Image (cartoon, rainbow over all chains, first blue to last red):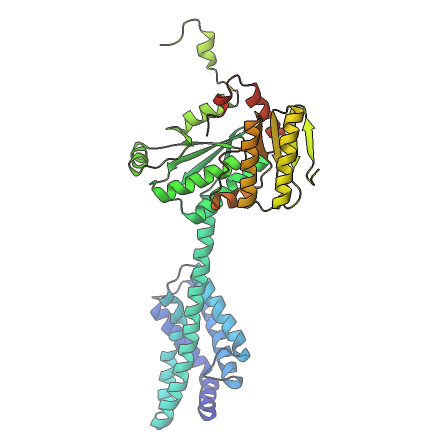
Length: 292
Length: 129
């Protein structure tokens, strides 16, 4: 093993600039041409990668890249994967950075070790497996970063889609958009109850205009939300029930046990009346003959 | 006299539960409370549970019982000050406390009791169930 390592190191040291140029040429070809900024970035990255590659070969195990000697190399690859994952590169485009090193590297080996087939084969194997490991590590980290991005977006979506609006003093509105599953119900409930506490509201209007379908499960979640609000001393009014949904509710035999209104406007009117407020049309009130 | 004090505000009684409930305490509270409702001719009972971090089925049943007993003695029961986390837990347990009226805090609870007592038709106020 150490013999092959020495051969590789000698070759690397001797042909470092050629190898770098050839590698960059490969990358440029694979990526179909790089723009100015990317070009500079990639060159810098490639140089750092080769330096680390050489350093790793000198001090570390070739068949295990999880050791502390490869830490800086791993960090380099992590940075690369993270940047490319966030910029929307595909896994192939990300991994090709590492894998494209094989072509110039093997060409170099073939040139230099042409006379010795045994040596060529064993050195090629060692290098190939090392580059594979590094490439796979890059892909793994890429996937991990993408998963993090997806989780964060899910979280943001959950928070975005459950606003609690104060319509009037003591009247909250909860416009629900999208399907209600258990996780969302939990968040909807928590944010509604928190707002009930902070605003002291006694009426909450739950608007389901944006809920595509109401099945037994969604109804169950609605009932839970309504009961929890009631326990906090707030009455709920259900609004935004589309004709189709009204039919579904009856056909499924769902009993929501809550006052429901067809539109948010009706619900607000009821909530205002309940809190002892009236809305007066001043123009109509002032003119002696009401408009037709 | 049990551990739980019962305070009189006008014609209402205020019970503030600050300690963990257990069977004996619950029974003592029911005894004391029913006696006080009769003695003070109270029209409303407010049970403040804002200090409780855990409300289980036992306390839920106790609250329901107290409400039922008060109703027999012509007093309205309002549970006030429930925490959001407690409300969510109760709902998840399937305990909606349907027999009990609720309010956000003592202030609103008092106003609710006033409204119910003052409304000419008591059943009318109970309509939203």
